[in-house]
Amino acid sequence: MQASRSAGKSASAFRTISEVSEELDVPQHVLRFWEGKFSQVRPLKRGGGRRYYRPEDIALLRRIRDLLYSEGYTIKGVQKLLREGRAKEDGAEADTAPAAGTASAGAGDAGKVEEIQAIIAELSELSALLKKAR
Image (cartoon, rainbow, N blue to C red; front, side):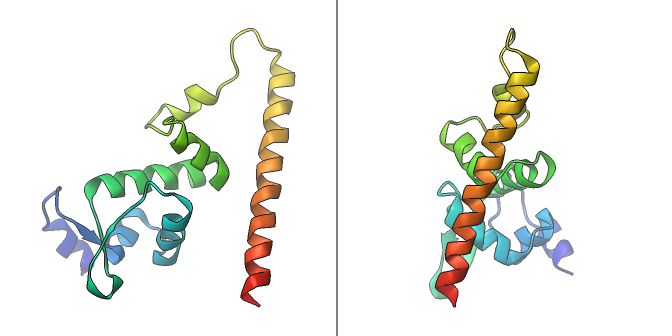
């Protein structure tokens, strides 16, 4: 039902959170969580806090989803890519690849250590949030 309503809108039309959630196959609460984590995601909010997403918001959310779910980035990793302007389509992998001439085993190990550290930091942040919620 909602897909047909969405399908009737023009490409430049604003979308509600439920339409974006359905289109990206991401729960609404995750989209709201990402708003807090990624300052670049700024849907318009109308009376009652209702969110309206612009096409550029949806494109950014799609890229964030792909980086997190398909490419294996952490939230902190995606935040860094967005801050540095390197989260463009098909550009993130090339920008984070080891430079030519570096020892492949050493570069891979350093990347793994960095990724593990980012995961630990993210888990610590989540733990702190859970403690506050109690």
